[in-house]
Each structure stands twice: as structure tokens, then as C-alpha cells.
Amino acid sequence: MANNSLESVLNIVRPEVRREKAYHVGVPKNIEVKLNQNENPFPLPDALQKRFTEILGDLSVNRYPAEFPDKLIATIADVESFDPDGIIVGHGSNELSHFIALCFLGTETNVVLPRPMFALYKSVVRLFGAGLTEVPCKEDLSFDVGRLIDAIQRVKPALTVIASPNNPTGLVVGLSDIRRIVDASEGIVVLDEAYIEFVPEASAQMLLNEHPNLILLRTMSKAFGMAGLRIGYLVGHPSLVFEMKKARLPFMIGKHDELCAIELLKSSDLISQWILEMRNQTDWMWNRVDEIDGVKAYPTRANFFLFETQRDPAQLADSLGAMKIAVRKMSSYPELATMLRVCAGTRNENQRFVDALKRCI
Ligand SMILES: Cc1ncc(COP(=O)(O)O)c(C=O)c1O
Image 1 (cartoon, rainbow, N blue to C red):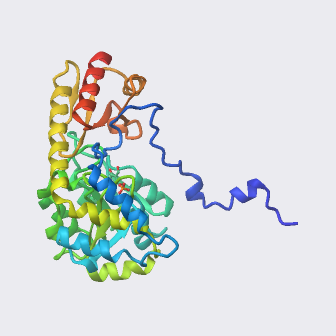
Image 2 (cartoon, rainbow, N blue to C red):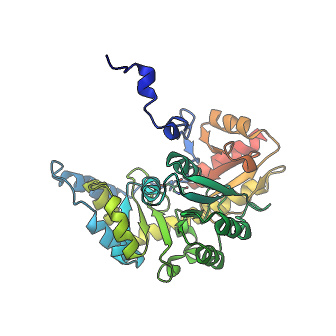
Image 3 (spheres, protein in one colour):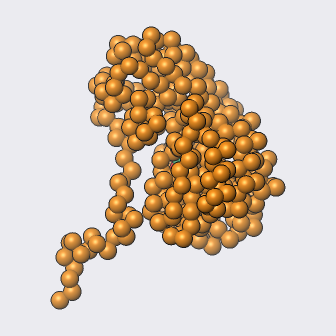
């Protein structure tokens, strides 16, 4: 008889997968003020919510969508001024980071990642069995571009990933530094611009034409307020994207998600208002937090920021959790071990957070 005991079945799982921990945000129960996932806190206006419902009502869900969401790609190309042939849409940008790894990584390849950066990338590199070189940040938590370039020249990575604005720090990498990194790389450089709507002048969009090794990664989960519908996209040189599409699973985006994303992208006034309000709320909250005695707020260009107090951060997060407020623990980033991350909510939510923080300190 074949040995298919549970233990031998579990041993079939690739060791790279077995060694991982499942991604887990860890939101405390009964939260009323959710400031831990850098989301847009504003619900859709009623008319748009109704339109989303109508879209679902009109769909033939028994029929497949197009292999690739061409209508959404055309809308993104139009609204964001990209070449449609350079766009691939994904089920959130997280899903696209796996797809990028599928295209460029194997056990013989290297990846360079700056620290501290959105933790998912490290896990993706491990899952694909690629070699990882991490480059520590400077004292102010910004990426050390000189050391990054040294590492790129030394290990010749197939892939380097940079996030700007970076999560969890909120810091931006200047365009001239992005250019230096891309110029120094023979491999692919992915620039994760998940929060770029908060600082549009920092986008490296203008570098795309001259640099076929640059890929931009964008999401509709943050400024666009669609985290629940899962839409992200990448933009690269059309010839590179043509090759990448060969590894792309068809029918990845549901018809409803595609059509809702199109509706939202067309609502440019609403999106501009949201972005302005999220920026104002971030500034408002940053100033209130930084002026509390014994609390330091770290500079940011995104809709969230890091802060540090005299209290143990895990205990402080738990105390806030007990007051029904969720912030993000940073214990998985050694250089941020004394800090917590909070994102801007509505004015009421932010006021509740500031009041609660004062009571905890
Ligand atoms: C830098 C960065 N990239 C990507 C993502 C994932 O976005 P999505 O919801 O599109 O998968 C996040 C989410 O927090 C993020 O902070």
C-alpha cells in the first residue's frame, strides 16, 4: 500500500512553503476605530454604492469574464496616461507580487530588498527559493541608496523591489535616487507605488519610457478605497509585459470588480476629495500625536505614520485594542521594535485615537 499517512502528505509540501508563517494581520476583536491597514476610511457615496449594486444585478455570472480585463486596462491607461499594452491588472497588488516572482525568480536568482519594507516581499522571495540580500536603512529610517546600489552591483539581482512611499515608514525615495537604482540594475526594478496618490509628484512614471527594466506597481486598495474588491496593476515596457502575460492566469479579475473599478476611476472629483481629506487628517493626527509629552511621531508622506512612546509598544497596542482602537504592531521589523504604526481615519476616529493615546501614556 502507498504511504499516504498525514506526515508523508505534509512532507510533499515544498519546504519553502512549509517554513513560512501564514500572513496574519491580527486585528483585535470588536474594533470600532480601525487604523491598522492604511485603508481609505470613507464609505462610498450612496449613488456609487447603488451603482455597484446595479452592476452586479446586470451581470451574467454564469459566463466567464474576458481573459484579461481589457475595459479596465483601457480606463487605467486613459486616466493615468499609461500605454495600455504595458498594463497587467491583478487581484490586488499582493497577487501581482507573486506573479512578478513567477516571471523573474527561481532558485538560481538573487533579490535585493531594502529594510524595513512591506514584509510580503521577503516572504515571496523565500517562497520562490531565491537568494535574498537585505540592505539596512539609514538612521532616519530612509533607504540607504548608496548601499543598495553597492548590493545591486555585487549580487546582480534578477529583481530589486523599492516601495515609495514606503510602508511602514511613509518615506519617499527621490526620483533621482530611483533613476540611479534603475540605471545601476541589469535586473528588474519593481517600484511599489501603493501610496503614490498622496504624493503624485514622486511617481517614477516618467522613467518608464527610458528604462525597460522598471516596473511600477499600483493598487486601488488605498487612496481609491477599494481594498475589499482587490484590484491592483503593474505597468512596464510593453515588450516586457507581452512576455510576462504568457505566465498570467486568465480570468483573474471578476466582472463585478472590473466594472466597479471603472466606475470609481471615472469619479475623479470624489477621488481628489478623498485624497485631500486623507492628507489633511494625517497632518491633523500627526501634529496631535507629536505634541503629546513623551511621544514622537515620525515624518511621513503617506496616509499613515510611525510613532514611539516610553511604553512597551505591544502593551500599548493591546491597551488601545481594549478601547476598541486598532493600530499596527511593528514587532516583525527589528529596527522599528519600539514603534507602532497608525493610519488616518475620519476626524472622529482620529480624535478617539488621540484621546485614547493620551489616556494610555
Ligand atoms: C507597500 C504596499 N504594497 C502593496 C500592498 C498590498 O496592496 P493590495 O491590497 O493591492 O494587495 C500594501 C498593503 O498594505 C502595501 O502597503
